[in-house]
Length: 357
Image (cartoon, rainbow, N blue to C red; front, side, top):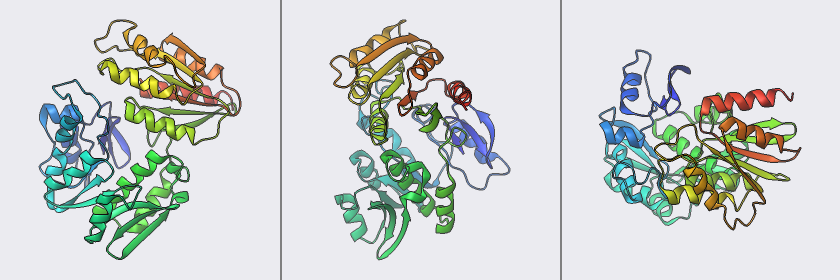
């Protein structure tokens, strides 16, 4: 597997850092122990060098949404992002599958350029794209009550959400979407359903398995969640997930990437101001071309008129901001920490949480 955290072969990490480009993909495919590979294909690598392979058996596109990295490398609209992301769909083998989000129109439209077949997924099985695809006898994955269902024609396979820990019983809706995409990919790969079920049941969303991907920790009776969400779509999904979890007070620690558009940075805190009582702003170690304090000013601008936030402060230094948030926590509270330096921040959080045990 290659992704933004590194390269992994048989569960062993052989490289670290952002390895979501074609060079890392080629290295993984050339490894003598590799029989199958899961390759993240990020925007930057696609623009620089294209894909690290000729054809894939399965291509997964989860969403385009409002887009990310807009304004960089001549990618200025969400339609531009969709054109870039559909490259992996265009390179599906004729006997392969594209696994596409039916609820995102820009993603659903990619079906027309797929040389192979398509599996659509969406929470709503009655979505027009889902209903049409299923009526044609094609494969779909959706939510039915407390279960995720895979269906093809009259055949169905149902997996209870309570048996998929990372969804927290279905409360974390963006994880439900991720799981549907994963089920579609595993199904397209021909994995037995017993194997798929076992994999979902055993995957724990901790900092070892999925660093900074909704890692939940306990700090003196308060809940701390570490995540790497850094665009408005991700922030909105995280805020809604946190809203579904019980808490007396909710706080968030956030910075902003300097190479994003002004409006995207402002929008992040505009969203957070609707969901969190405390908002702690910090400045990234790398400003990515911005003047000192410029990103903080944009984040602060997004909090103007915030309907829920009653406390906000600006802090220089990620770990200092994290410590400040922890100091304000009481039993029953919840804090969402949007990390910048993933490994270092997680190590700091794990150390602080361990000190209280």
